[in-house]
Length: 184
Image 1 (cartoon, rainbow, N blue to C red):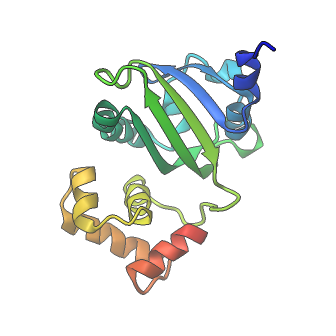
Image 2: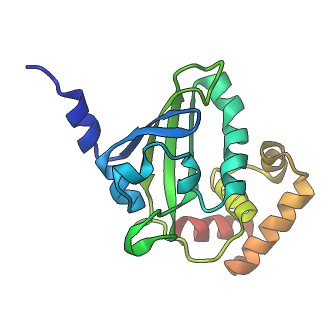
């Protein structure tokens, strides 16, 4: 029996993207559904169209390049943005996993999967781009120093963002904040 790889790609239960230099070369039906866009709207576009802001797009690209270079793969939970349709502009939590086809040039070509986490983790509070980044690292269990190193900011700055998050989520401790972020 011959396997139809195109059909498998198109009907995969997770969003899939083939990329070249951070441009969407191809994507499947699930990704289009997730972001509320047609394949024609996404193919040829920078991944930027899927991000809440250009700043987050740039910082994410800078952050993941050395990891892709060293490991060949990368995964995280991040907030993304719906492109079109009735939920246009809506932000949602998404699990993103990627593989660089050439580790020496990590953005040159890649395979990416996207899983919509909004049914388990809706975005409730309005957060800044940096607060979203700090929140994502806190949920991974990183310390302020580790987050600061990853984001290339001081650990004291991370603590300021954590304090803001704690106020927004009415959390008394970091553990309480993480719990609220996980169910928020």
